[in-house]
Image 1 (spheres, rainbow, N blue to C red):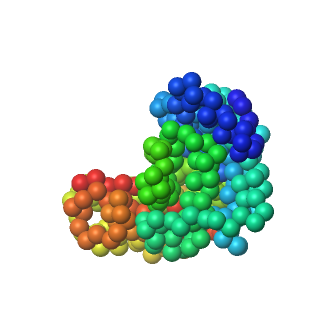
Image 2 (image 1 turned 90 degrees about the horizontal axis):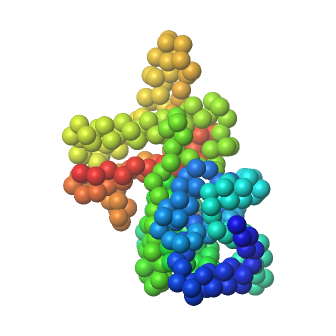
Image 3 (image 1 turned 45 degrees about the vertical axis):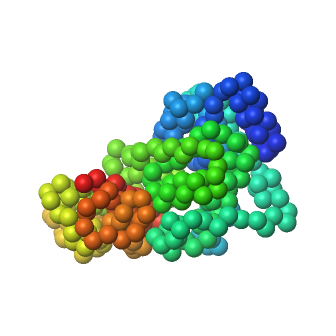
Length: 299
Ligand code: PAF
């Protein structure tokens, strides 16, 4: 596996291979890899002749006070996992080569970046778009692969690629969950054992929402109310009493909810009825950790 550490050698790597007719997929990551990232590498391998992962903790997508400094950095283990999977190359640039002194240009994100994550993290998608475009410049690949757990990010990147005429196909990989149902995330390692138990109300609430849809509920207002009740303490308090009585570990809801919505799955705009493909999106804090999760709803 080749380790590429500067933009010039990254570009050369791609162009040399493309000149012999090979296709390349790029899997951008911030490291601290888990099986979700590795599933994206597998998608890249299936689709293209070569797959290149990138590992870069991008400072411009973190607001002051967010977890940039404590974001897990596990480069040695990441490289070992990528190599064992047959990844062809990894691009691990320095901050100074992605953001050289005096660098002031950035990408203005597309409309789908507004609202939801865009409201709670106003600078975030500008940083994501800027770094993803820069990574695609360094690695002018055929395919980019992103995870569906960051659902809005995926739509933002697809829109940016379309709007800026980038000749890159964007593919997505399904959410990979741990056995207990929690969506895999590099940030899960911040959770204590008790917090992790509490965080499970998120995948449970999304599963129950799918059951509600199966049983015929089509009012989005009703679905959202039920989703919120399952995530917030009101319902969890009742569960806690029952769990305590049954000798089960006491589970609470999330500590605070940023949003829990059911919206159009392409535009993320509000809808009233489930008469088109929709997505349920949740962002919540458990302890100090902010978690996001989602599930698509087909009708
Ligand atoms: O999803 C992530 O890990 C990051 O937002 C990305 C796409 C690698 C850009 O830094």
